[in-house]
Length: 93
Image: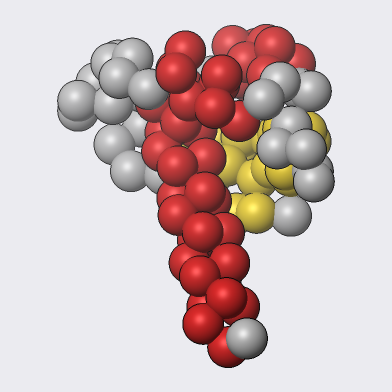
């Protein structure tokens, strides 16, 4: 389970999972517009992480971001963290 603290949106946090095939599941937004965010969570469920980033990155609501944009940022951070862990494992071998 991944947890991302949002910035500049009504939602405060995004919780999600990514499986071994880079598919997103169990997305939950804490705070924000409940109905809209439940809809986003259902729409991205089972989707490839890169496809979701491409669709949601850059959507603006206020403060230069939005809840969908924050989800894209959370997924980008997840990928960077995962790549760093992979690089670290490669370096140890």
